[in-house]
Image 1 (tube, rainbow, N blue to C red):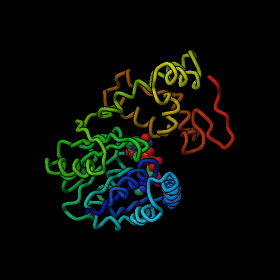
Image 2: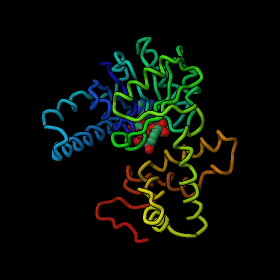
Image 3: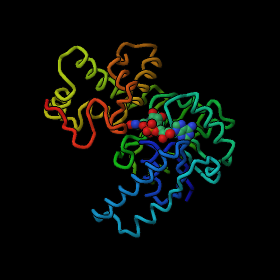
Length: 290
Ligand code: NAI
């Protein structure tokens, strides 16, 4: 079984590492930020503690899975990987730098994948010596729970790499769907108006965050309201994705980003991960009534 690398131990990277370890792979989870690695490890231990309590795993099984994950700050640990999934900041320049470096570390047959939500996979892979090994593998948050994964071959991706990458993710008991390398792929494109229109409704003073969420869950049948969902995703990431999709569709006003979201991201109101977003997640905080 191949060794798997995950670059970025944030919301998505930690979840992807968990899924790969549960599927039996040795995983190298690498981040530049030591605190992010510590947080990922602590949260992983908590999650598996709960899974043991629920009877999903024995304590021994949980320990075996946890031991498969190597938390590290050293990208050289990627050298024996057959697949690396990058889940760092949604910034093309930073991703370019990382992909170039990773390619210089790994063997020729290692697949290099990005979990990008909105950047073009072709543009990320353009810096590689062997761009036919580049592919988009797009998980949803939280990665261990969400079954769908979009597989996005770029124009440079070889058919073998697409087949191989898809087979690996299928073997992780995920449901894969092939999508073209277009802004937002399938799900993020369909979801843009869900967030965008909710923000516009708020900005027009039609209703507040809690009321809009209440209407969408109680009356609309959605599992999560748009503001709760954006807080889950992270307002920094969600805003950047909207901006990229907007630019990529030649400034089509349907995808226009919102100042409300931009200001929340700038203020550090990122959502659950920072303890506050549209709602307050501090201990003891009371969610406002609709
Ligand atoms: P995050 O902000 O939670 O985590 C990013 C992590 O990457 C941080 O721990 C940071 O320290 C690390 N990092 C940044 N630069 C790095 C570098 N050069 N080398 C190593 N580590 C580095 O971000 P999140 O939400 O996990 O998103 C990551 C990627 O996944 C983005 O491309 C995003 O578009 C995509 N994505 C996000 C989803 C979400 O719901 N948050 C869903 C699907 C995809």
